[in-house]
Length: 195
Image 1 (spheres, rainbow, N blue to C red):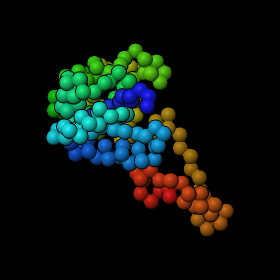
Image 2 (cartoon, one colour):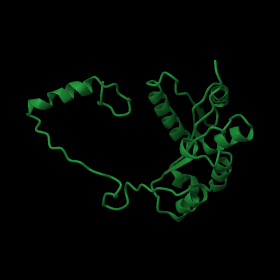
Image 3 (tube, rainbow, N blue to C red):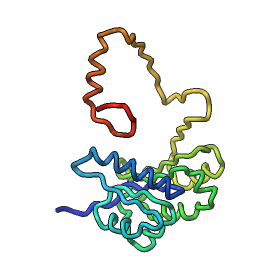
Image 4 (tube, rainbow, N blue to C red):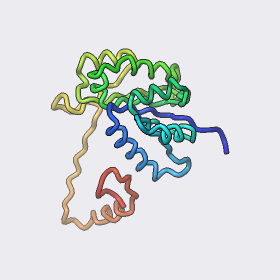
């Protein structure tokens, strides 16, 4: 049935443990998506058979360590023609371990020149967004980047809007909200939230 799905997202992690944690989260999210199902491949050292089987099947998201992902690309085990999301988690750690050339090499294999929903979106997550190395990498692989700094200044960015709603816990008029929330399926990411 139908054309084979190829990865739309690549998430690079600096360690096997982090890659396994993120892959577990992707699997949890995928439990709630049925048509189509969300499939992922975990590419880390030592998991060759499982990783290559996952790549042969429909795969929407690749989660892996930089060395293993690069190896699969070099051996042409993965088709990156449809990738729309390239995520570097803990980007500062990649640069501390001198992986810049590997990142650039993987990036060079990704589609470029798309517009709208066909455009490649690059996301960095880092504890040290203000380092010169992160700024340099951003200049090399991001087009008009938007920086979201959650730790830097003690002020709220202009792009974030806050609303405060005071609720009297004794007011029975709010009881309907508790009933509504109880019927919402959970994403299993936020314990205690939803059904």
